[in-house]
Amino acid sequence: MSKITFTDIGQSYDKSPNQDTWALKPISMTLETGKSYALVGPSGCGKTTILNIISGIVTPFQGSVSFDDVDITKLPTAKRNVALVFQFPTIYKSMTVEENLAFPLVCRKWEAAKIKSRVGEIAEQIGISHKLNRSANKLGADEKQLISLGRGLVRDDVTALLMDEPLTVIDPQLKFELRKKIKQIIAGKDITVVYVTHDQYEAMTFADELLVMSLGKLVQRGTPEDLFERPNSKYVGNFIGSPAMNFFKAEVVDGFAKIGDYTLAVSADLKKQSDRYLEFGIRPEHIEVHDGTGENIITADFYSHDDLGSTRILNCRFGGEIIKVKVARSFQIPEHGRINIKLPKKNLLAYREGLQVL
Ligand SMILES: Nc1ncnc2c1ncn2[C@@H]1O[C@H](COP(=O)(O)OP(=O)(O)O)[C@@H](O)[C@H]1O
Ligand SMILES: [Mg+2]
Figure 1: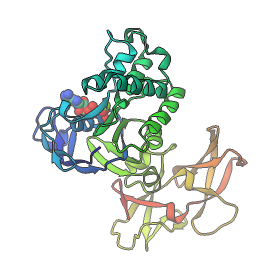
Figure 2 (figure 1 turned 60 degrees about the vertical axis):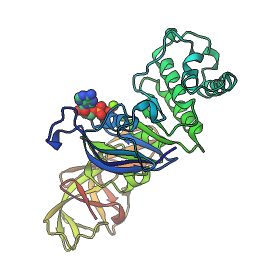
Figure 3 (figure 1 turned 30 degrees about the vertical axis):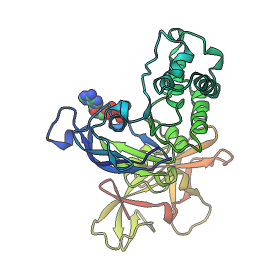
Figure 4 (figure 1 turned 180 degrees about the vertical axis):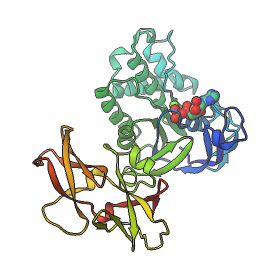
């Protein structure tokens, strides 16, 4: 259980001096003890690289890593006291399920009776008690992943628990259950957890804090609410949320966003802006369908809708842009044609060159 600090860490696998090509651009950050973090972003953005630098599998090209302010950059993985769950699990095929789960504890020289009881407990929690005596060789891909997860969770004295897309091969229903179980198993323990996923829902439902990455860079970190309510870039607005945030271009006039005949109040202070045009973003969830007129109510053209089961998306056109509005299932879908929608000031965010203007 440690605080993990990155100081100016950068990784280039081919030792290139050109930072633009680095798998991980220089980053300084702290992950607090006892909190769970999700590293999220598309494939190739550097998530596994960060995890491997924490575990010691990769020695960074530059910078230092510390656990509780002790520099461990050069310390081998075996001495870092971290538990790892890999994306592609390695299972000891010649061992039984029980022996596989016990392995980290045997290595730590736990007493046999304590091992038996702890392995029994974990097996129960992840639902494989009835398979303890099976040979690991005979297991399916998802069961192997379960064992790997169990091995990661079996020790309770680790500095950090690092999981790299641990549920990728697990079927969706079991995935949901397992995520809940992992949360229960680590709840109340003082372990720093780093969980890698490319799935925003998995990240949001699992972690206290998300670290959103793009092209080797940490773009934004925050709670699910921060990322949903205040995406600091168009990238995060698009990556987090489904459907993605709506964006449109508008002229800046006297601190307002002017588009067609409408003058919209926005959350940012645009008085100091020198740009004539900026982009504006609003989440589909924040737009309200309205009867009347008033501040930030516009008339758009509603032309189709998508049924998402629990919610519906109204697809509208406004000033040449598509605006999506998320409504409750119970919402009475109107006729196609003109529709009045409100873009609340506090939710209408401004962006310049892809970055939020405050
Ligand atoms: N061992 C390696 N040697 C060379 N390039 C690598 C190596 N590992 C990863 N990369 C490259 O570094 C980038 C980041 O990879 P990775 O950290 O695995 O991303 P993610 O886990 O987000 O998919 C990718 O462009 C990948 O091809
Ligand atoms: Mg990866």
